[in-house]
Length: 327
Ligand SMILES: NC(=O)c1ccc[n+]([C@@H]2O[C@H](COP(=O)([O-])OP(=O)(O)OC[C@H]3O[C@@H](n4cnc5c(N)ncnc54)[C@H](O)[C@@H]3O)[C@@H](O)[C@H]2O)c1
Image (cartoon, rainbow, N blue to C red; front, side):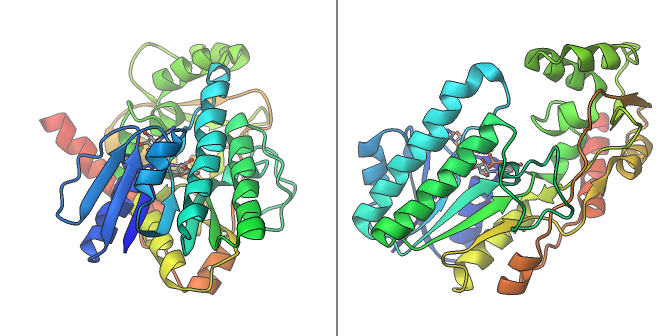
């Protein structure tokens, strides 16, 4: 029987598909883009998840679905695309899964279903109110509700996993990385904030930019350094497989991610040390980013433990950085 991985050309989906193939499974991918994977037990459907016919053909003989396909954007102009991919796309995947009687659907939700920018208490656990602040987080919360509804109305067995922020270790020190570029590199952050129309942030950031490549330690308006969860893709993949195999996650909604938060006041000086880049500091308007999320429930239920904490990711990122400088 086949396992379907949607979002199979993406960061987590491709890595998950490879791990399942390595474990001897028959795997099918479904993504807008080809994954580049080649294997005797691998097939893929390259299509938009809002295409019901494509979703039906992807679902043939499928027992397990990892629904990871989604669009991630925080730009106001991307709203329509977000809802099409993450809400309508999820509805179509769910309908197709119910039609073939899938035995387990695991849904990639997000920590952004919580108000991560303004948590009511820390660490954020599953009892925290879900009040997304981004449109992306809202589409994930609607996705969760649709999954739970498919469980209630059609008996679809499901697990909802609220993913922490996740990236490949080597992305950490890549100024072109979608995530780490704007998070850690000054010029990339300026470009991102300009695109988002955050003029107050752009002004604060431009004031410390001397035009030379540099890292930026972001703090809030009171000088509190940012703090957040960052999870290695490999841990997310082993967590997904643990959630599937453990057999006691059906009907659960749980946080999945690293155990310890990353404090930027510690991470940025270390990044500056390994790259040799200067580190600038900026106090941005507003409360800033300051949260940590509990993975206790997931670890207790499955026995899973993450293997790639931030310091290990950074060691690998530093090696990749050095290799790039000498190539
Ligand atoms: N990476 C993170 O920090 C993070 C955090 C929380 C949740 N998530 C969720 O985890 C999942 C995987 O994340 P990722 O980091 O691998 O993202 P990614 O952007 O690398 O991969 C997502 C994949 O989905 C595909 N996709 C997008 N719209 C589609 C559509 N309409 N039809 C078919 N395919 C479509 C994209 O082509 C892409 O390959 C997503 O659901 C994401 O929302 C990720």
